[in-house]
Amino acid sequence: MTIYVGNLSYSATEEDLKAVFAEYGQVKRVVLPTDRDTGRLRGFAFVEMNEDAQEEAAITELDGAEWMGRQLKVNKARPREDNRRGSWAKR
Image (cartoon, rainbow, N blue to C red; front, side):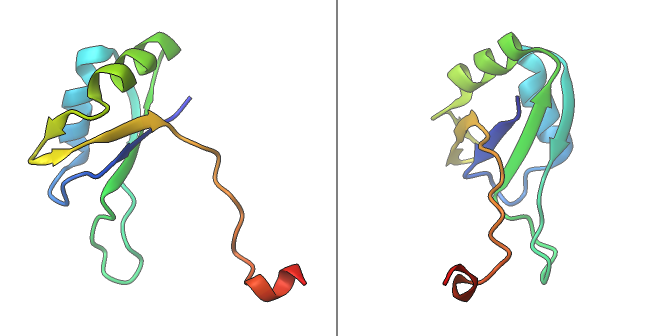
């Protein structure tokens, strides 16, 4: 499972997120997407941990928590939808 972390501070780093999630278990991977044009963080991240039980504990404890001056939105990540085609292609 992958965890979605939303409403992140734009100053959050991969190391910051690893430190927070490490309280719940071993962090396998952290992805902080950036804007293609500006290179600026997009305000959300994805975190993978080694065990589902650790991920569930992190979601339960961190969803709605205040961190770096913002209230986090933490939940199970949904699969990415393929929306590369424009609406005209659906006709």
